[in-house]
Length: 565
Image (cartoon, rainbow, N blue to C red; front, side):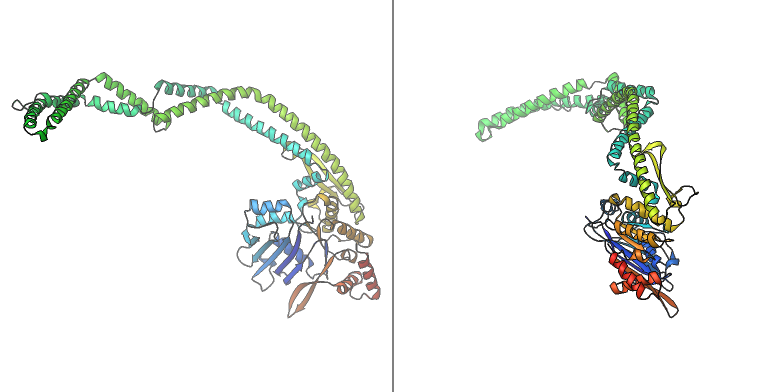
């Protein structure tokens, strides 16, 4: 499947360019133009769209804002979709084009957009690094960073399976280390906390609270507190029923008996009232039951100071436990008791585990060490092969005396990607030391080194679009032709955009763009044109012999175009 491509780049009011739009495609695109025409401004515009730092000084004179927009077409690397839709949560489909846009006002803060939705500039830059690598005098090179260098070496050395196994061992080791730290932390004050848990459990077990007990005790407390009042009231009720309200008044039951007898006489004379005596007898029986009940209640209501004291003490015990453990009722106390018992059991288990984890951790460390050594050995071997390949390749592109090396150094401790620190080094000239790639001053040397690296890593490099600026600085003749061949080979697997001054490189491209410049009314304006075959022959001839190139230059240009592919 072909990689995603930078389909279009549009810039407005950037330096000398008022408005320019590039239509790009797969394969190799060459950009040429006279010195000062603004070729590198195009790279600056792309960097702007990809989140590079910028201020108002880049804005074209007289304009209020500058903008850059880069549109990429599918298919995209999987990491792009994960970043856009997963981490950033933006609405976008991987089957659609993806637009990255940046606006820089002369005053105020700039804005950044992904798929038409505003984002932080840092998010724009992070996404841009997945889509484009810029190689030259600029800073947007992914392989400047050591983690990216390690990942590139692992890809070249087919270390994926070893790295996956190592990461599993690393995760197991880290999990055990974390568990050991937790156990050691828990061991501090172990005896004190165990004693405290045991005390709490004993206290709750001794209390033996049962659901509903507190409500029952509170009701009993009220009865005992008011025992005399309750006994007097019950006795009065009993007296009214059996003895009467006063010496002159008959008791209620006696009165009801007389009433029942009278009703019997009525019923004898009036059959319609025959049910009244039975009803009166029923009421009398109920009153007798009531009288006996209140008599018994009055006897039970005798004051009992000892029982009252015991009830109050029990109530205070339950209330104190409820407050102490922050629960609402006796059921909460029972739940707390179960939790405390579980915690004590866990402490006992932790104590046992503490004695077992050290040998487990040592075994995990040994397994991790073994996997790290296997991974490191593979990296060392891959580093030697890749370094030899890149050194041979840069020798073909005008850097015959240069040396490329890959340092694989042990780190002080293992990390999630192994125990090695990987760094790409370049010795551009004899007698000079080896320097990290990020410290290489010459843009041409850096671009050619990156070209050699990208060619070696082409099959496993996930970044689809590569921009080369100054790749041909300080070279000519056969060396430039060799660079052109490398670029054409790399374009089989990547989209390549190359800013060049050499006809032998430009002739290799599938499409050829030219940056033009003109001055009118005291203002300089730059623009871009796509060259057809005729215009391309003229441009190639100019690159080889200047504006005065004659028929011989044209014939050579035709020969170069005929050699493409």
